[in-house]
Amino acid sequence: MLNNFFTIFPKSKSSLHTIINRNNPFYFFTKNNVAHYNNYSLFVIYINCGSKNFIKIWRISSKNYLIMTNLRKTHPLIKIANNALVDLPAPINISAWWNFGSLLGLCLITQILTGLFLAIHYAGDVLLAFNRVSHISRDVNYGWLLRATHANGASFFFVCLYLHVGRGIYYSSYFYSHTWSIGVIILLAVIATAFIGYVLIWGQISFWAATVITNLLSAIPYLGQLLVQWIWGGFAVDNATLTRFFTFHFLLPFVIAGLSGVHLLFLHQTGSNNPTGINANPDKIPFHPYFSIKDLFGFILIIWALFILVLTNPFLLGDVENFIPANPLVTPVHIQPEWYFLFAYAILRSIPNKLGGAVALVASIAILLILPLSQKRNVRGNQFYPLAQISFWIIVNTIILLTWIGARPAEDPYIIVGQILTVLYFLYFFLNPLILNSWDKILK
Image 1: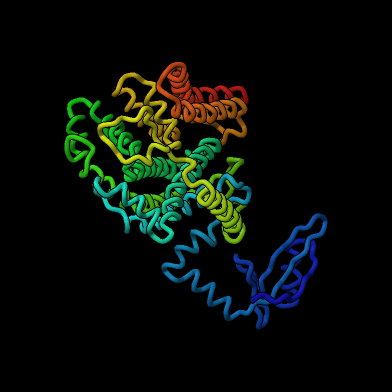
Image 2: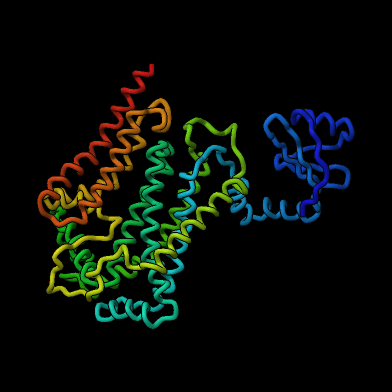
């Protein structure tokens, strides 16, 4: 579509205007770097190459280009995608840490597609569920690939999710309070979806994880036991529970997709944050092709990593006891959830009181909602606060250690270490505002 037309070497953009306008007063630029010269449409790029500045101009097939441009910007549906993925102004300095939003979209689409095909062959019945999962892996064409991709895709989903949240905390993205609040709700919805999906395998660990976690609701005064029986659909985790979990696991991803759309809507109202934390409006570039290429590179990397895991060791992140069918009469020696819940499970286990543990479990995620209110600072981002950087990396290491503790037996010294780490985890959200405030005062 582009034919090399000519190159000129003015000293600045204004020089180009002068040169062209002298020769042809009808020459003009548009905001999309498309100009019209006599019967040609021209695509103009200003290039700064060290000491030499020059402008490259290509001749465009005007008819095709204008049809595509008009369709992209005027069609009611395509215009929405264009404003979100093509012409979206993005800060020029955002780094690879901003790639995880699009990677999460890829993970969500992967989970929905693989989940739909798995649901075709699954049966939400306690007598059939475990055997159906085995049937999918052994008898369905490429069922082993679908199941392994879905199971390990959940792990990759949480890796991207935790890194996305961590980047938001480090660079103070929570000041976009509406975007942040919807993001925390999405996080809670993803956690709920992953948990009830884990139960659907109906292995030993799945069954007892469902029993332990749903039993936590019984700690709620007055209503607790009624809530538990309502969720179970009876007096124990049984057929009604599995049917309900299957139904919600099927529906929640579409709710998450809708919430993600609202998340993006709020984000595009304010624009993305950037590593410097300052207003980037004067220095933005179109999302495509600059950041769409970076996202594509991220897609290739994560798909490559996922399939390396799926094709070489698909059960690396699972629990061997989940290959045993659920048995309500035999309790496993060590009940633990998937690795991405272990830090929250360690917090739950570190508090001896049942109600206190349940509250701490929910608060470990819900506490993110207070960040827009509690974290006041003069400059956005931890990059300008050395003490805040130290506290941030302390909390990152605390979460990693809590994940390790969650996989250990509930005995000393793991219990006392888990309790210390739990205190450190919650202290961060209350001490960090004091650190920020004191540093702002020092700078004044």
